[in-house]
Length: 322
Image 1 (cartoon, one colour):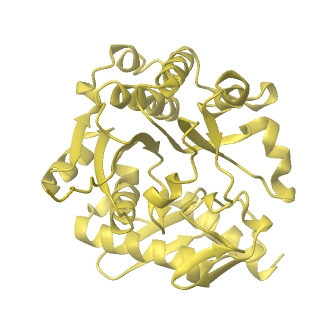
Image 2: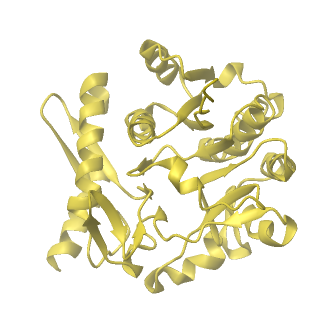
């Protein structure tokens, strides 16, 4: 009898509200378009608009949980007691813990930030994790011009946190969940930055942790000045390393009804050479396509004063206008 080859499978989770709906859907599409295996998603919808739009998709591989129905009473009890951004940060560890303890038949279970974008196969990325390790995270790898952020924001970023269920990873995420439920604020003078500075202790605390080495895992505005990006054989690379995903922190995007979008690539960052052709333009094109399909409501088309301020000051820096 011919042996059947098993297709690898990953359970990924993410969360977003309607302000990040286009980004969240673009993330999902980017992972699936570059995937060599099966992906199941659990999405924590942080408002009713997200719930409605995701359920309209009717995709068998997407499970949608409304925040008010999420089976984590301790998290939901924080509503109204913490700023909204802290609720969002706290939710990441809680959602990952929920997924790890709900499913046991996936090769990996992981959390991904909604403003990440994959340009290569997530299964190939995970092949870096040795059999002796059970979960993995990636460093910020701050460029010299951003190195002062290391003690403020932590060594690691929470863009992707992924591992094997039923291992030390479960214990780690369980502790992480308890920590963020207790406190998830920003106090950079004391080295606290939401949920991510808790990861600083993981390398010494958990022997089965793997730290991704490839600089193309977690490429972001805070480390772009370290590298030169180029295309090779239809892949985006840093030297000989393939780029797997980019974290679009600082990107300010506004959809203009029916015909165009306007964006600031990396607000607050001064990047020497922006990989516009390789990374930014393809991402913004996908955001525009997603936004067009969503037919976002009119109030989301307005260009806010804050956005115009960011746009104006970014143009000033770019054009060196005083």
